[in-house]
Length: 423
Ligand code: AMP
Image (cartoon, rainbow, N blue to C red; front, top):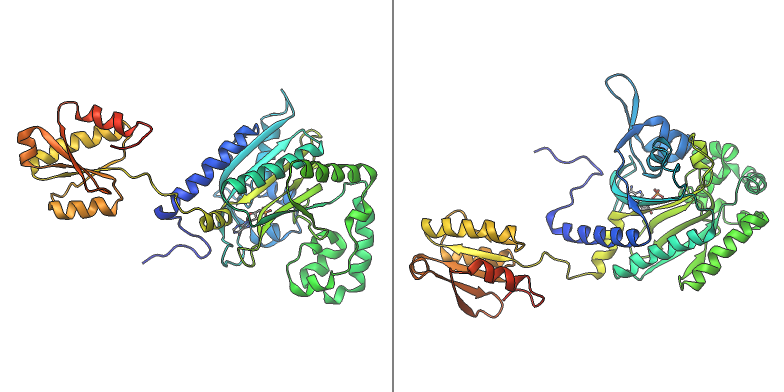
């Protein structure tokens, strides 16, 4: 039997109601905060990711699914969504009417990482980006919005971690200080970090290798190097989070692994998922739109790891299952044809309706109704056809009522769709 590819996974029907619930909650919340959905392709030219994410990142160096298409052009399965959204923003000149655009997308990303629990090679993200707003109020609002989503999904054991990465004015000073420290302990760093420490020392702070983490315990903090503008920006983010009642921690070691981040960087972390503690990663990227050939417009965004969010939500939400429906148990060919007509009509009018199409016994049809979680069963045999009245059985109370054929559909639909629910 052919199995799925390592690191890939199926999301099975039993998990789908939770995924749909999360998607609905997230979309509603994002739309209430003024975001519009955008759908971007799953593949882009490799160059887009190499330029935006940075050549010397794990993603670009080791993890991208890149291959030549039939004409030899290098294309890549997207490892994240920001680059594509920025490309679309520039390509379609979405800034021409108003530079302020709030966009979100939900979909799969691909990274050839080492698979483990909570880390897949195809995973899903809910990604949101805001262009054209430099104000720290937006940074605070995005973190507030994320924490609201978490609390709507009953996830409370999580915390927002924030840091500032400075800007092109103040970051060089920090880089020099960091580079000095790294040079002192270069022999304790992993091979990648040795190479990266001269070119992009900040990247070393993002390394997960234990020996590198140990070597970095007393490195300088970027917060001590912020220029007055970056300092004020970061102070405002914090004070606004406080005003909004968002619990947060300053995490001086937090850097985002991608080259284009400036100023606020944040993560939402949890202790509930073992080693994979980050559920959301985000931050400001004021130079990216320009770096990719667009106007000088600031940006900020985040990506929620959908798989990890679903895992967290599953711990706390128990009652997200399919709404119970109606099952029609029909005995004999004539009854089955009548049931078929009704099943089609009822499904169209909004009642989830199932029936048996294999002429099974009443006993096994009742079992099937039970398995499907039907709350009501409409029973139709020869006798009922003669009497022109079907039996409606409530599967919880086990009580039965007679429903005359005349007006049966109208009666079922009106009662089912009433606020009290099914009869
Ligand atoms: P990043 O795009 O690396 O900032 O990641 C944002 C979020 O996506 C992380 O906090 C994770 O929740 C999720 N994520 C990233 N990589 C993976 C992966 N390989 N498998 C599952 N989730 C992931």
